[in-house]
Image (cartoon, rainbow, N blue to C red):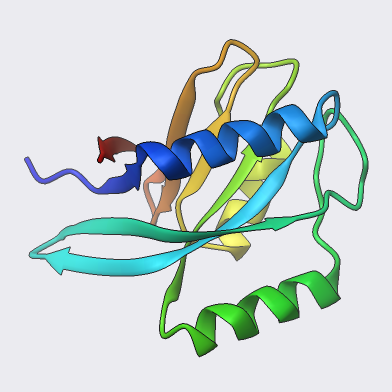
Length: 142
């Protein structure tokens, strides 16, 4: 069985954890840039850059990104010849599973969503066309 996966280095993993610490007790968030490789019906999302963005909700249970921050991030990704490969956010007081609001926005933004839960567990999910939410494998590289 082919499984979609996200490849992240230890360095980027630690950067995401630092975003979480900095934002606490609110949700932290970032856009993830890199490349997407297809192998048959399986995809590999390689994270090559993290773009930290401010949670304009300033909330521990939700996050939003200002339009101007999104535009700037997309321009930076385009200039770097990369693609948006994911959206990262934290759940400081719950587990690493998409909330109802997350699921609605995952349909609008059909890229992997990486969530860091209150227990330090990090998991990745994507909306699988017509099948609902699907968990992706996180592969940590050097």
